[in-house]
Image (cartoon, rainbow, N blue to C red):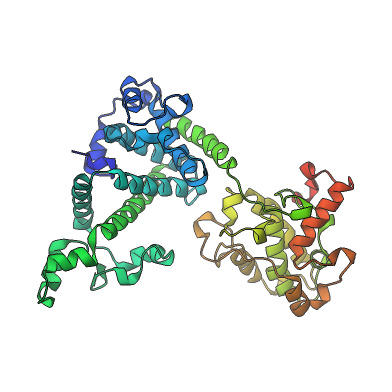
Length: 453
């Protein structure tokens, strides 16, 4: 029988497996039994030594690399990581899940990209394992895990609101009883059995609820439990000193995640005749007239829109993602500025400088506009940017030239470079390309001073 911890490493069975680990020193030791499982996994690639784990540390790092490759590599070869879907690896994988959670909780801040990545990787791992399990084993595992999870608490429909928002699930797919989702067959028959006279309640249960919904909710529950587990570890860090082996693993993960994601960075778009709209230091000399005029200061009457709507969106995208209009993806600031260092040290200081240059200075009589600036960066209505609040609002995209002429005509002082340009970002990318071509600046070290002003 397949171990419950194969899908739910946070089960009591999974915790008992971890308790049986002799000591954390073992995670860096060569493990012949682990390698034997890997090598004898059906269809496993063994010619590529980078994907064959020799230690539990290797297995942990490969678990993260699998997710990044699986999500980003168009030429992803599932045989490179086939061992993750060999049920014999369940005990080792359970141990790895727990040491990964501890290392990530210790190394990275709450709500960070890396924490989200680990939670998402666990969800995808469960999804893929469910697909590959034999039907009888899958039904038995799902039933056992859901029974265990639902004994403790029911599930309000609002728990799945993010899934409903992504259209992976519709509210009409759910059977509700006083706001709680009905998943258990016996509960369904008890609550609704007398409502059906022409067919079996069990048959109706299979039609309305069925395996797909149960598996979807199971995955969501286990992802939530993973996130809660990391939070519980982080809440103890002030009073508990993490083992050196876990600290070292966290540092290794930091490097491995950065290197792996760098291979698939797509935060630029084709600039046509002007090359790629590449991420880089802000070049003030390349700002379009409307932006340069805003930085110099705006008089009363147009200050709010100029700083909050125009400058905030332009500066943030020009610095972090100038190719936004050539992309079809939804992006957050932290996708590029993972620790918010650029936002805090380059983007916000320039915006605040422009606000101080206004007549009168914007924040003197409009201090609430600082919150509106944070909101336009996607961090909600708060006084400071924080990863925990990201996503409460959307990262506001730059105004078009047409809207600037309509709403802020006093700032639009067109020059010859504005011809055939419809957005300040396009002007900026084209101007940088021209300046680079003419040798007026080195794009690799452009305007270092802009981050210090």
